[in-house]
Length: 100
Image (cartoon, rainbow, N blue to C red; front, side, top):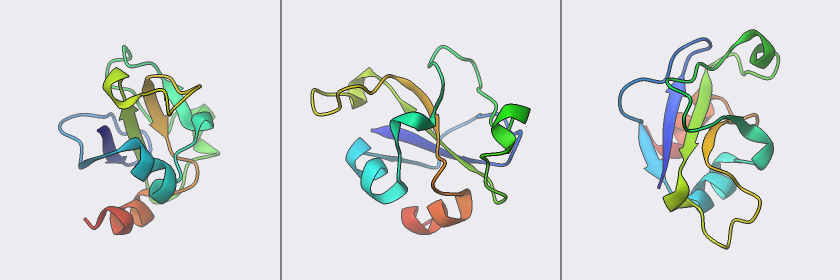
């Protein structure tokens, strides 16, 4: 299951994710795309909302999704492990979708 964090711009990913969902849920309900990849899994506490990310960042916070090897199958060609920051949805909308 992909791990999901809701973060403010510049906030460091810490603690437990707010939710975990299947990749198929992330694709169809959260709009996760390959272009959303921002960092390798080895990156310790990735920060979202850095200067280069600020232009694509929503005003109401970021949705960061962690994908590891256990999430990927042959049904997901071209995907890689790592952290993905949604471009298509901000944290406020994601809260509604995740029913938080």
